[in-house]
Length: 148
Image (cartoon, rainbow, N blue to C red; front, side):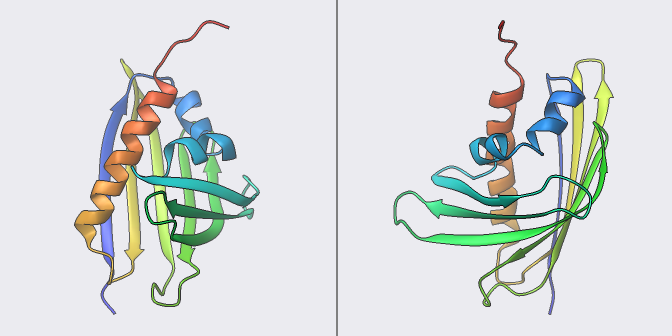
């Protein structure tokens, strides 16, 4: 079975520590991760190496949802996150892996994303669109400098 690979690159005007934290806090993930038109519910979350998670995205228009989960394989604070993902839907088989790297740059943080093993039935271009929407929402979460 052929699977898809996604590679993305983005620079955000935010410190690496803040961007990294947005990938590991359940409330932050629920805010920025779902693509436009979807909500996210975090059912279970253990943000540590060997820890697992379970989430679901719900299409706000139709009410349909799909759940997924995985395990954290590597966490290097403000530098790297590596985890697995799999859908609960048997029509979306296989295990995906994602590696997110963070690099401090003069204006903030450079993020590189590699997602491998995307099920064949999911068009790669749809994954790109979803990730792009998610990353725009991530920028809106981590870039503002708000005084306490």
